[in-house]
Length: 112
Length: 112
Image (cartoon, rainbow over all chains, first blue to last red; front, side, top):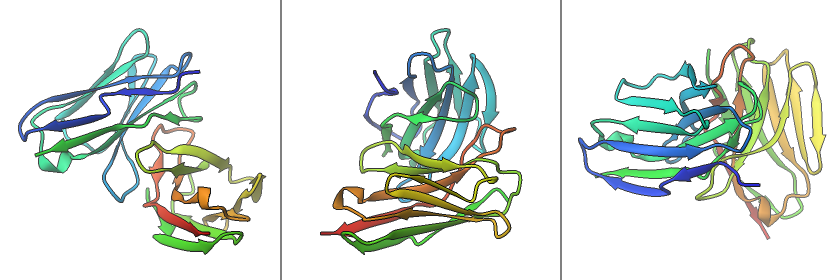
């Protein structure tokens, strides 16, 4: 069984640029969540989507946006990148809204 | 009130010993407490989880102890092995919410 797939695995961007990160959930999972993990810290919640609707949003600026497609895959978009956006971005999928999250290996974003 | 405090930040245990990681929370609305294991370059993987109506849960060498009155829970790894060397995160979530609240992580090193 394929797990949660994230692309790209690594990315280097310049300050002010825009980035799109992609996530394919486990087959049958309808919920996708995004987390930001800064080095040495626990992940911070960014968004959750369930059945293509936003169900939750963390304390992140409007530069961060996301969407979920009819096939339940998801994109996370970040505009006007800042050096502080450098982090590991994790996508998690689950069958239910709340439990049983399976995480992908993440996208390592470096902003220079 | 949304925080989960985790200690210690790092832990070195001899092979065959018991590794103990502690977490504390404030919000009594949390009703699900998972532990995640993360290896370098990988996303977190669910290890074991507990609900507050249970005082202990054991799965193989991993045990969660839960003290509802003290609002504390801990992970015990029995017969610790070098392959257990990883970063461990405790987390908490509410049925009515969608975001995992994470501890800061414990870097565990098992010495052969």
